[in-house]
Length: 313
Image (tube, rainbow, N blue to C red):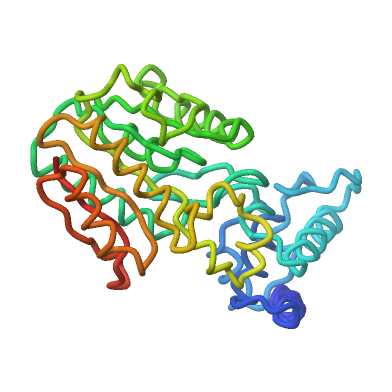
């Protein structure tokens, strides 16, 4: 029975310290079966076995390549391989190879920061501002692009927008390009409206030709304080350090440099929306005002926590 399989798998993950063992077990089984999570829930409720959902051809989304003709055997092999990786605290998203972000399904793996739900709040704040100002063809910059989650969301959700993305790591930029290619298949018109530059987002020379012409900068820069090493192995041991730590004990060095770069990129009246640590709001608001922004405030995420800087030039 699928319910028994999930119960055993969840026990294994729980022993490994996974906070959501049953959810992870169900998601991995769904991945192995090329099914949806709701299919697993329904099968558990109905008391069904693997053969009820197994694909007739014997294939599965995460097949191990063993060549077995029996679809149930294929599924079990793939599922247990993924389960073993998760028990070693490899991020769930790296194992499945993708993660949802707003309306996108982004490819992720070693070398790229996994987009978080709180960053969706940051994107929404930017979209709300664009809507309020009735911008038809906004020019946007995504500094520290990573997977491309922010910029690709804007260029796919705002028809006619132009996006320039900057990523420092060549390895990470490969993930950005993959996600651009995947997203462009779904939204063909974006291919010519999204440009990626592999460069230092804090450098005044990066995108210097755009200074004073950008409507909005939305960014999720590295901001974790160097004195606050994450406890979760999935973050501490797998997320790229380049995408995590903000360059100083309190984590504000890189965000402050991003504020300076954004101020030069933006046209008068343009806006910076920048994700930050829960402890950094007051300092970054003050820094934005000192840099020259006319107004600056702290926005909250969906849980009511201080999450991002909203500054207007």
